[in-house]
Length: 87
Image (tube, one colour):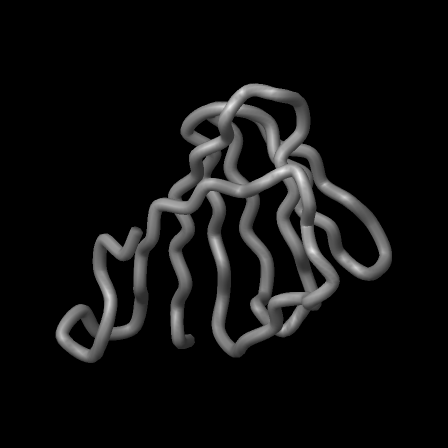
């Protein structure tokens, strides 16, 4: 669910996301920076070389050029605030 997006908000966009149990095969990769704040649940951020596990209240920030995927851990629904910057 987009919260802020498009040229009107300047250099960043914000979305509410609901990671699933299956991270899928495709890896996200983009310019700028990414910040993920976990609102509920537990999420693995899978990078090519390592995995970072984040839980409700945790935040992870990384350059968008790193290939990454998201995967919910456990049965509880996961909800996160995703902020992308163009810089």
